[in-house]
Length: 244
Image (tube, rainbow, N blue to C red; front, side, top):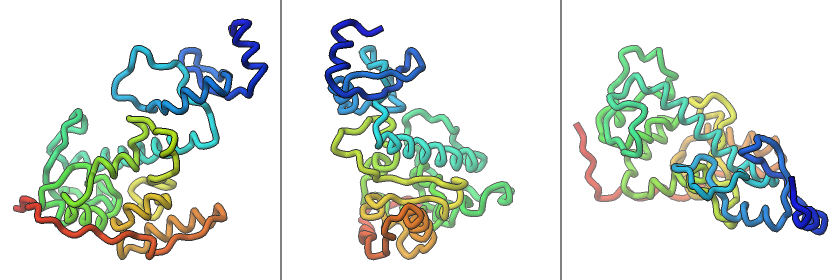
Protein backbone atom coordinates (compact mmCIF):
# COMPACT_ATOMS: atom_id res chain seq x y z
CA UNK A 1 0.00 0.00 0.00
CA UNK A 2 1.55 3.34 -1.01
CA UNK A 3 2.03 5.99 1.66
CA UNK A 4 0.30 9.35 1.37
CA UNK A 5 3.57 10.98 0.28
CA UNK A 6 4.15 8.28 -2.35
CA UNK A 7 0.58 8.65 -3.58
CA UNK A 8 1.06 12.40 -4.01
CA UNK A 9 4.32 11.76 -5.91
CA UNK A 10 2.59 9.31 -8.23
CA UNK A 11 -0.17 11.80 -8.91
CA UNK A 12 2.32 14.56 -9.76
CA UNK A 13 4.45 12.68 -12.31
CA UNK A 14 4.16 9.89 -14.89
CA UNK A 15 4.20 6.32 -13.66
CA UNK A 16 5.88 3.22 -15.09
CA UNK A 17 4.70 -0.39 -14.93
CA UNK A 18 7.09 -2.83 -13.26
CA UNK A 19 7.09 -6.44 -12.19
CA UNK A 20 7.25 -6.95 -8.42
CA UNK A 21 9.22 -10.14 -7.78
CA UNK A 22 8.05 -10.61 -4.19
CA UNK A 23 4.37 -10.06 -4.94
CA UNK A 24 4.55 -11.76 -8.36
CA UNK A 25 2.31 -9.09 -9.82
CA UNK A 26 2.35 -5.89 -11.81
CA UNK A 27 3.11 -2.71 -9.91
CA UNK A 28 3.44 0.97 -10.74
CA UNK A 29 6.15 3.32 -9.52
CA UNK A 30 6.93 6.99 -10.20
CA UNK A 31 8.98 7.48 -13.36
CA UNK A 32 11.84 9.04 -11.38
CA UNK A 33 12.14 5.94 -9.20
CA UNK A 34 11.82 3.61 -12.18
CA UNK A 35 14.65 5.40 -13.99
CA UNK A 36 17.02 4.70 -11.09
CA UNK A 37 16.19 1.00 -11.27
CA UNK A 38 16.36 0.93 -15.05
CA UNK A 39 19.68 2.78 -15.28
CA UNK A 40 21.19 0.21 -12.92
CA UNK A 41 20.07 -2.43 -15.45
CA UNK A 42 20.03 -5.39 -13.10
CA UNK A 43 20.84 -8.78 -14.63
CA UNK A 44 17.99 -11.10 -15.51
CA UNK A 45 20.10 -14.10 -14.45
CA UNK A 46 22.51 -12.79 -11.75
CA UNK A 47 25.45 -14.95 -10.70
CA UNK A 48 24.70 -14.24 -7.05
CA UNK A 49 21.73 -12.72 -5.30
CA UNK A 50 22.57 -9.44 -3.61
CA UNK A 51 21.09 -8.67 -0.21
CA UNK A 52 20.15 -5.15 -1.25
CA UNK A 53 18.81 -6.13 -4.67
CA UNK A 54 15.55 -4.42 -5.54
CA UNK A 55 12.40 -6.54 -5.59
CA UNK A 56 11.43 -4.75 -8.81
CA UNK A 57 12.81 -6.71 -11.74
CA UNK A 58 12.83 -3.92 -14.32
CA UNK A 59 10.45 -1.32 -15.70
CA UNK A 60 8.48 -2.79 -18.57
CA UNK A 61 9.67 -0.25 -21.12
CA UNK A 62 9.49 -0.69 -24.88
CA UNK A 63 13.00 -2.14 -25.12
CA UNK A 64 12.74 -4.75 -22.37
CA UNK A 65 12.45 -7.27 -25.19
CA UNK A 66 16.20 -6.88 -25.76
CA UNK A 67 16.90 -8.85 -22.61
CA UNK A 68 14.21 -11.41 -23.43
CA UNK A 69 15.70 -11.92 -26.90
CA UNK A 70 19.06 -12.64 -25.31
CA UNK A 71 17.40 -15.10 -22.96
CA UNK A 72 15.85 -16.80 -25.99
CA UNK A 73 19.28 -17.07 -27.66
CA UNK A 74 20.77 -18.51 -24.47
CA UNK A 75 17.99 -21.08 -24.25
CA UNK A 76 18.51 -22.07 -27.90
CA UNK A 77 22.25 -22.55 -27.40
CA UNK A 78 21.53 -24.58 -24.27
CA UNK A 79 19.35 -26.90 -26.36
CA UNK A 80 22.27 -27.42 -28.76
CA UNK A 81 24.55 -28.10 -25.79
CA UNK A 82 22.18 -30.80 -24.59
CA UNK A 83 22.10 -32.37 -28.06
CA UNK A 84 25.88 -32.72 -28.26
CA UNK A 85 26.32 -33.78 -24.62
CA UNK A 86 26.45 -37.44 -25.63
CA UNK A 87 29.67 -36.81 -27.57
CA UNK A 88 31.43 -34.92 -24.79
CA UNK A 89 33.80 -36.29 -22.20
CA UNK A 90 33.11 -33.38 -19.83
CA UNK A 91 29.87 -32.99 -17.85
CA UNK A 92 27.25 -30.42 -18.80
CA UNK A 93 27.59 -28.62 -15.46
CA UNK A 94 31.23 -27.59 -15.18
CA UNK A 95 30.73 -24.43 -13.16
CA UNK A 96 32.67 -21.41 -14.41
CA UNK A 97 35.60 -23.50 -15.68
CA UNK A 98 36.35 -23.22 -19.38
CA UNK A 99 36.86 -26.57 -21.08
CA UNK A 100 39.45 -27.01 -23.84
CA UNK A 101 38.93 -30.23 -25.76
CA UNK A 102 38.43 -32.08 -29.03
CA UNK A 103 35.08 -33.65 -29.89
CA UNK A 104 34.92 -37.30 -30.97
CA UNK A 105 32.64 -38.19 -33.85
CA UNK A 106 29.45 -39.79 -32.48
CA UNK A 107 28.98 -43.53 -32.86
CA UNK A 108 25.41 -42.84 -33.94
CA UNK A 109 25.53 -39.70 -36.11
CA UNK A 110 21.82 -39.99 -36.89
CA UNK A 111 21.09 -39.04 -33.28
CA UNK A 112 22.23 -35.48 -33.96
CA UNK A 113 21.04 -32.76 -36.34
CA UNK A 114 23.56 -32.76 -39.19
CA UNK A 115 24.50 -29.13 -38.51
CA UNK A 116 25.78 -30.08 -35.03
CA UNK A 117 27.98 -32.99 -36.14
CA UNK A 118 31.63 -32.16 -35.35
CA UNK A 119 33.83 -31.00 -38.19
CA UNK A 120 37.31 -32.38 -38.80
CA UNK A 121 38.74 -29.36 -36.97
CA UNK A 122 36.53 -29.98 -33.96
CA UNK A 123 37.73 -33.58 -33.89
CA UNK A 124 41.43 -32.76 -34.20
CA UNK A 125 42.10 -29.26 -32.85
CA UNK A 126 41.87 -28.37 -29.18
CA UNK A 127 39.26 -25.63 -28.75
CA UNK A 128 36.89 -24.07 -26.22
CA UNK A 129 33.74 -26.07 -25.64
CA UNK A 130 31.39 -23.10 -26.20
CA UNK A 131 32.30 -23.16 -29.89
CA UNK A 132 30.54 -26.52 -30.30
CA UNK A 133 27.05 -25.08 -29.73
CA UNK A 134 27.07 -22.76 -32.75
CA UNK A 135 24.64 -24.18 -35.35
CA UNK A 136 26.95 -23.64 -38.32
CA UNK A 137 29.87 -26.02 -39.04
CA UNK A 138 31.61 -23.37 -41.13
CA UNK A 139 31.28 -20.78 -38.37
CA UNK A 140 32.67 -23.23 -35.81
CA UNK A 141 35.70 -23.85 -38.00
CA UNK A 142 36.19 -20.12 -38.47
CA UNK A 143 36.09 -19.62 -34.70
CA UNK A 144 38.65 -22.37 -34.14
CA UNK A 145 40.99 -20.94 -36.79
CA UNK A 146 40.59 -17.42 -35.41
CA UNK A 147 41.03 -18.43 -31.77
CA UNK A 148 43.28 -15.94 -30.01
CA UNK A 149 42.54 -13.09 -32.44
CA UNK A 150 39.30 -11.91 -30.81
CA UNK A 151 37.90 -11.40 -27.33
CA UNK A 152 35.55 -14.33 -26.67
CA UNK A 153 34.16 -12.61 -23.57
CA UNK A 154 33.23 -9.66 -25.78
CA UNK A 155 31.44 -11.99 -28.19
CA UNK A 156 29.40 -13.57 -25.41
CA UNK A 157 28.69 -10.20 -23.82
CA UNK A 158 27.16 -9.08 -27.12
CA UNK A 159 25.12 -12.27 -27.43
CA UNK A 160 23.90 -12.93 -23.89
CA UNK A 161 26.04 -10.91 -21.48
CA UNK A 162 23.23 -8.61 -20.37
CA UNK A 163 21.49 -11.56 -18.76
CA UNK A 164 24.31 -11.81 -16.22
CA UNK A 165 25.98 -8.42 -15.89
CA UNK A 166 23.06 -6.18 -16.83
CA UNK A 167 23.22 -3.30 -19.30
CA UNK A 168 24.24 0.31 -18.86
CA UNK A 169 21.61 2.61 -20.33
CA UNK A 170 23.76 3.65 -23.31
CA UNK A 171 24.30 0.06 -24.51
CA UNK A 172 20.71 -0.97 -24.99
CA UNK A 173 20.66 -1.28 -28.76
CA UNK A 174 20.10 -4.81 -30.03
CA UNK A 175 23.49 -6.31 -30.68
CA UNK A 176 23.17 -10.07 -30.52
CA UNK A 177 21.43 -13.05 -32.06
CA UNK A 178 17.77 -14.03 -32.24
CA UNK A 179 16.60 -17.65 -32.55
CA UNK A 180 13.32 -17.88 -34.45
CA UNK A 181 13.33 -21.58 -35.36
CA UNK A 182 14.89 -24.84 -34.11
CA UNK A 183 18.23 -23.91 -32.50
CA UNK A 184 20.22 -26.29 -34.70
CA UNK A 185 18.94 -24.66 -37.91
CA UNK A 186 21.25 -21.75 -38.72
CA UNK A 187 18.77 -20.50 -41.33
CA UNK A 188 16.40 -19.65 -38.50
CA UNK A 189 18.80 -17.41 -36.61
CA UNK A 190 18.69 -13.67 -37.11
CA UNK A 191 21.75 -11.47 -36.64
CA UNK A 192 21.14 -7.97 -35.36
CA UNK A 193 22.66 -5.16 -37.40
CA UNK A 194 25.16 -4.43 -34.65
CA UNK A 195 26.18 -8.10 -34.56
CA UNK A 196 26.63 -8.23 -38.34
CA UNK A 197 28.86 -5.17 -38.38
CA UNK A 198 31.01 -6.50 -35.54
CA UNK A 199 30.93 -10.29 -35.84
CA UNK A 200 29.70 -10.91 -39.39
CA UNK A 201 33.07 -12.40 -40.35
CA UNK A 202 31.91 -15.58 -38.60
CA UNK A 203 29.52 -16.15 -41.51
CA UNK A 204 31.78 -14.93 -44.30
CA UNK A 205 30.95 -16.60 -47.63
CA UNK A 206 27.84 -18.19 -46.10
CA UNK A 207 24.54 -17.19 -47.67
CA UNK A 208 22.16 -18.89 -45.23
CA UNK A 209 22.58 -16.67 -42.14
CA UNK A 210 22.34 -13.43 -44.10
CA UNK A 211 19.35 -14.63 -46.12
CA UNK A 212 17.53 -15.64 -42.95
CA UNK A 213 18.39 -12.33 -41.29
CA UNK A 214 17.10 -10.34 -44.24
CA UNK A 215 13.90 -12.37 -44.42
CA UNK A 216 12.99 -11.27 -40.88
CA UNK A 217 14.12 -7.71 -41.52
CA UNK A 218 12.03 -7.38 -44.68
CA UNK A 219 9.00 -8.81 -42.87
CA UNK A 220 9.36 -5.95 -40.37
CA UNK A 221 9.78 -3.37 -43.13
CA UNK A 222 13.51 -2.87 -42.48
CA UNK A 223 16.26 -2.53 -45.07
CA UNK A 224 18.12 -5.78 -45.83
CA UNK A 225 21.79 -6.08 -44.95
CA UNK A 226 24.53 -6.90 -47.43
CA UNK A 227 27.80 -8.83 -47.41
CA UNK A 228 29.62 -5.53 -47.56
CA UNK A 229 28.32 -4.88 -44.05
CA UNK A 230 30.54 -7.71 -42.80
CA UNK A 231 33.85 -6.70 -41.23
CA UNK A 232 36.97 -8.52 -42.46
CA UNK A 233 37.86 -11.83 -40.82
CA UNK A 234 40.58 -11.29 -38.19
CA UNK A 235 44.02 -12.44 -39.31
CA UNK A 236 45.20 -15.78 -37.97
CA UNK A 237 47.47 -15.08 -35.01
CA UNK A 238 50.72 -16.74 -34.09
CA UNK A 239 48.95 -18.57 -31.28
CA UNK A 240 49.77 -22.25 -31.54
CA UNK A 241 46.81 -24.59 -31.19
CA UNK A 242 47.48 -28.18 -30.20
CA UNK A 243 46.49 -30.66 -32.88
CA UNK A 244 46.42 -34.43 -32.78
